[in-house]
Image 1 (cartoon, rainbow, N blue to C red):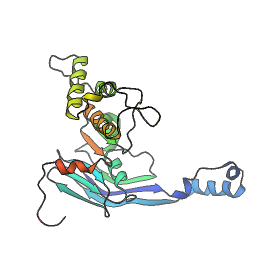
Image 2: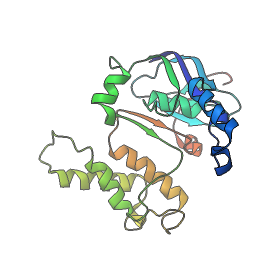
Image 3: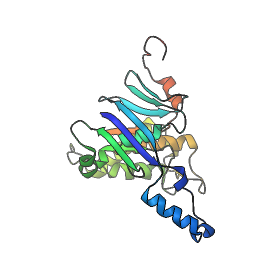
Image 4: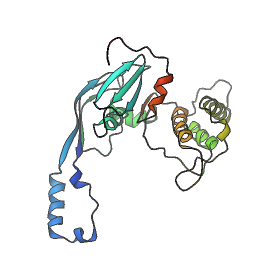
Length: 236
């Protein structure tokens, strides 16, 4: 649940990369001191409120306006680039670093953001739009490493290795990655899987850690076409 949510970010004027000339420029030194004392800020989000119920999935897409609507059990954040969609998902996933100030109420059931960060940090996950992986690891190694980080203590006749292997096999089967199991993930410098496969690896890697709350930033919305959802009556 979030209410009266306000997120303040630094203005673009303080994000420029300094050069050798600007470092020794007296006017730049004065400007730097002024920015430290009175940083130029702007509101990214202001007055946001809402509730995400258990079982609903929150995801982001680019549309002309910023809004939030539900399709059965799918919650979609819509907004054009720069409207604050990523910021909303980050704050709901308790990723508050990099912002000047975050105000308002955010509660995860009865857990505060401070308690969540201290005791339950692994239960909330934010997946950025960029697919960042270890490029030299194979698909199998990537998912096994993610699954190993969150092996439950209470297991029914399964060792840690058996649980990790079984969960990895399930995710590889669900996301159709069996043919690329031994292929390196790769990046811009190392040849690996395709872009679509890398996106599926990102989703599978997040699910391997078994998060209780997940925010998915700019994931392919073509998947909406294959979801068996019931559209509400009337125009959206």
